[in-house]
Image 1 (cartoon, rainbow, N blue to C red):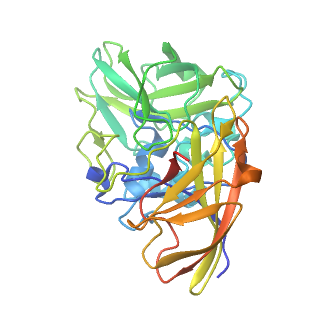
Image 2: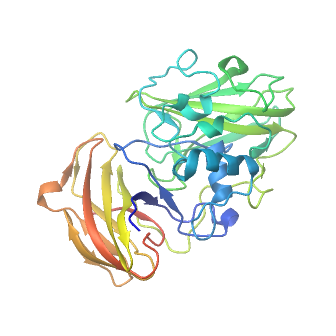
Length: 360
């Protein structure tokens, strides 16, 4: 059956919670974009994808709110948990992003996150202590300078109420916080300390708007929390009760991402015994990328055949590497090039583990 899906493959996202390695993330069509969302406290999209991902990479959420969101907004949004964005927000908030749509970037994202605005009390939650200092972690899948505006719902707000700007108070603004882990990897993140207000109890929501200083693009993140004396524990997801660790050690080390290079794997079409794929190579940097290479391990039963717009080599460890050819050697800042390939397959069309840029 013909199909077209676009995927970015990462390694072992939170394997201790999910019990699986080699997760594959699906991306929609469009220009190269940065990505990021709150990982601690986990956003609705982040925690729902943790809850939903199974050992096979299929989505099967156990949380009822996550399950309903998957049914309403589809799998593309959940695979793209890090892309709740508006390319033209330019730091605007109240009066620009309508009330009731804060958790979906005003419904201006390339993907449908509208279901994650649902006013309900059963979203996954992070347990915190009022007055304590917590370490915020925010994905830096594509790193950029800018401000992180951190809001907290006012006392008396209930998760069964629509979230509006009047429900929020700004409690912190952080500019260009430090990073841990490399951009373009599943565990890479910005981090900073957040002093939580004293005298709070019960349900609340932390809303973060990441305002890029090098672009009009902004990111939006809704994290459900409860002030009950907790220390970052998460409930309401598969394997609940423990604190998510964003940087597990995978069984097989993934390829190293090179600078601002990012690779997106696509299955363009498939048939019995084979498929046609492509990989978009993106430059998220501010300087031209002069030469590139992409490496991945094909899934079990898959053998790469012909390649166009790239030069293929195979390693003794089962990996394949595709390098640029003369006409597409240079990728402009925020630009991309694409190479294609055909493959025979008796198993999974997707990569086994991660796909990423390596030194050319």
